[in-house]
Image (cartoon, rainbow, N blue to C red; front, side, top):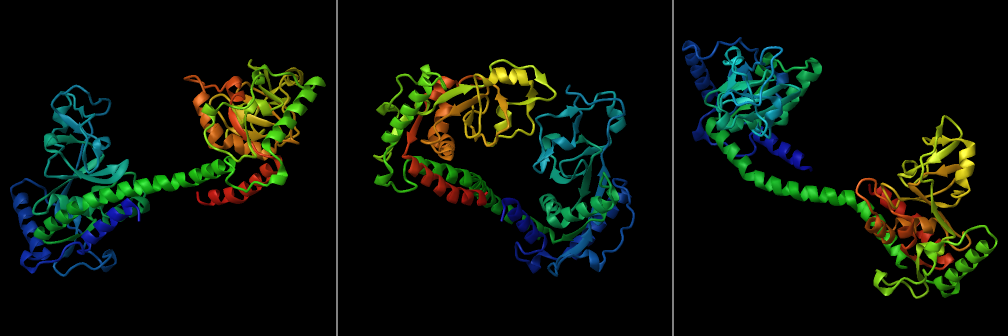
Length: 495
């Protein structure tokens, strides 16, 4: 049950007479009702309120549930006077200057009261025309336009303030003010308001509709006891809401946290067992270096100055223990090529070769559906330095940094500077293991730590190259991927 559902449930118990016991010595609602009618007639005779129209009798269909025998079903207008507010003349505006004539708007009506932070005032020359349309601290407001059905009271310091035309005031006697507010906030009344505004299709809740709202009336002493019980329960509801909010936050985080935990276990060597027959990360690292030297010698890749001197990371940058058969390495040292897209904004074309920026891989999947285009000639020029191909890895390096995406298309495209291109030996590194490695907390924390800048943040290639990573044997990489493929979908089901 949500906190709001709990509050609604308590209000429902209150209006059903189930929150406190009934006491015969407190009289009946019928007796109270007759007292209210006598008081109303007295005020009408004194000219303090106007005589209202006779309201239709309550039908059986309008009674939603049973109430105690000492209570009485009534229509709101039979025990209150519903009076409207007034707008200032057309073409005139409220002012921030304190003229002494506060004007309460619907936007000020919050949390069953009125906020005083941004009050506006009626200009002095407009006040005489709306001076009668006020609301007192003994009244209850109900909003009738925009936000419809909000109910509350007026703080003492705003007693006698002018009332917006988008709210009405309920004037009453011999009814507990707090009880009336709680009753009008209950689903019993709020559902009636919703039905009227939906079925009638009115953009404004008419006074007549408010008068015809059906509510239960308890004896006055019981009204006060009900309010006291609700006030007693409110701190408990607040504590429940705090616990609920924490639980909801935990539930929202849990799938993501579980995913991170699985990736962390994977790169710590705790997700699958190690098998001696699969070799070691050191042997694999040496294979990568041999292949890289061969490609350099053949002129297929260039020597990368960023990776010169990068070997085993020092002890002070190694965050945790890994299996003996694994190896720590710098990311740049296990790549054949690390570069990024063009640093200049190209001349865009209406068609041609697609041009990919970080926005085209923001969700971790490369999408070529909404890219910009460059000419074939410019693509050829850019491709000579940065040549993305199927199986290569993209990595966001500007804005939202550290998002990897595997290239899974043969369609040619060029890259902008916001995206890094990672080329590697597919005979030594499983592409999906590299993908999960880049998504792991190990790499993501380094991406966050080493991203620089205030506005358009940048994770520079040199910092990417010096990112500390793990290197398991290739066969184990594949078994880790298989295990993650089995477990990660379970995290998605938790969302």
